[in-house]
Image (cartoon, rainbow, N blue to C red):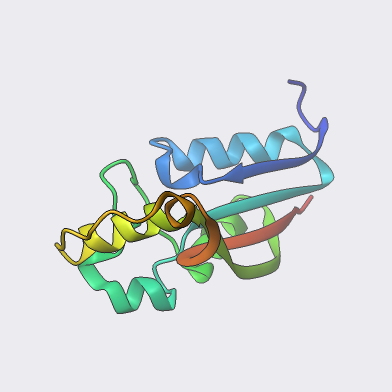
Length: 138
């Protein structure tokens, strides 16, 4: 992909998995045009769900190498030539069965099986996910 060739890059549920995060953010900066946009979602350690759940937060996963708040994500991206445009919490669309399973795991409870009509229903659930948009600075 040529440098300065892309109008936008999306990194949804990506940054927390990158072992070479600083390098990869630098590469994203290089591939974006001067007015390019970066859209990111990451687990938000400062979210109400994360703070209320503590060590049982469902986003505390072995495969997550990094955790962010809006301010730490801003610091990282500012260092690499990005300016913040927007931050907001986004729900995680999940089946009721998945939500019940994760809540049971978090509380160390074995919950009864749900009826299929309820188990498969997808609803927006607060999970502590941060959406952020950035513009590449020159």
